[in-house]
Image (cartoon, rainbow, N blue to C red; front, top):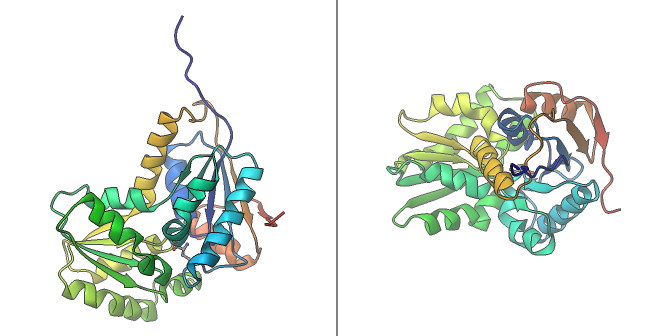
Length: 273
Ligand code: DGL
């Protein structure tokens, strides 16, 4: 008799401060189409990037509780700021597997053995946490790492100023010090930034490698689900359920943009119940 593969059809839970984490969802849907996903965007309390570590940890805790109460089999913290400040504590408190976006990004950045001088752009919260800097330094010695907080980028992207001269100018101001330091790799350490990839490619000197953790995160998730025997049955057709703590037309439009397709019906989530 053959061994039966162990599968689990329950949804994966994703959360982010808003709809930016849908860049990770998109990558996961492409790689793991059988997985159903329950996504929570805490749009009522966005942004997390400018809040204190204590507040971010409290919000992340409420987000995870919401997902667990909806029966998810694992949680992906699809927010760099929440991963930076809350991941270790969440893992201590909850029994479901919880994955963040930092480790996959670090693995991707270091996949090229020639990587030496790394620039990181992220929210102020992520840069100040030094989570990326520590994770990189732990994996390889001798790296030169420069973190650059870029707090104006999230509001510009939310305003859909993706291809706007003002965004270009501001991005240039953030990139200049990193380019001056001769970076060979730039990590996009914020869920919103993949939307700026065309502009970033235009502004950076040729040869600077861009690392966007969404794809690596999906691969990391597949490895973990396989190891934990939590993959969905291959014949399942994965569904996406989207919950936001504040519903508005603007967030619906943004969700469409991040997902590159209609997000379907969006429900309102009430946290802390
Ligand atoms: N999701 C956040 C991150 O990836 C960006 C938006 C925010 O500041 O809440 O860091």
